[in-house]
Amino acid sequence: MLLAGLCGALASGALIAAEPQLTVAWRDKPPYHYLDNGVPTGFLLTRARAIFDSAGLNARFVSEPQKRIWANFKHGATNYCSISWYRLPEREAVAQFSQPFHEDLPHTILIAPRAAARVKAHTSLNSLLADPALTLGVVEGVSYGPVLDAKIKTSSNTVMSRTVETTQMMRMLTVGRASYIFVDREDWEYFQQKEKPGQSILHYDMPDMPPGLKRHIVCSRDVPQATMNKLNQAIAATGGIFNPGHSQPAK
Image 1 (tube, rainbow, N blue to C red):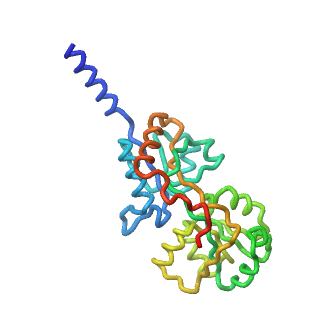
Image 2: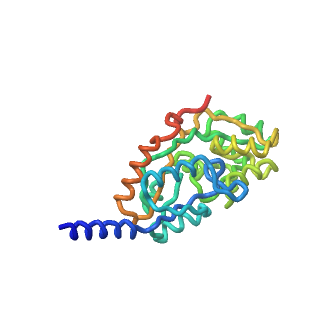
Image 3: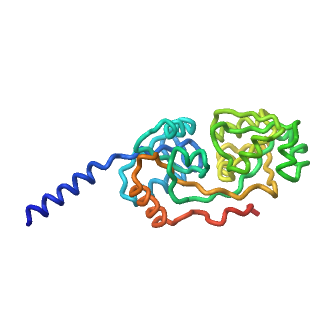
């Protein structure tokens, strides 16, 4: 009887040991997750590490470009997860989503000074996006949320789409490559602190900006439901949705 119990314990331990390591990819997006002097940091990267630790999952965190992350999901990557993504139908087609662990503030608008008067003449998003004299800078491969994505797709603006990170797009705005961009408030606050753009970028809030969206952990289809359940339980155990109530415009 003792021998049987010992064998059962050893078998159970072997199964735990054999559980595959998860690769957890994150994209460069300060202050959410980024490299600071070569050291990975950021408030959502720290939170994500805490979630995987709380879930008891063996995870290896790696930095990868956003387009590669979603190409990996589309091409059948295994034991693969990524953090901090909006839930969209095209993404649900290739990956499974955790419960949300963060809620954004609504996007805000940054304007190149030369375009300030023309942008601020518009009092609604529909009017702004219907102006053919304006150039909208868009980071290729990311979502601004389903409402803004749809409006951008049908916009009469000249859309300047570039495969760059958000920080680089803001730098491009400082030299007038676009008239304006949509940006997360946290990105803008970080950029102000680090690069002190002064009057080279102007900040503008639109009253009808869509609500802020929730961010999730996503995993490849082969990741077991039991693992997703552990992640959801760990999200709840480490605070649930951070920043709840950010669906209303900042005052």
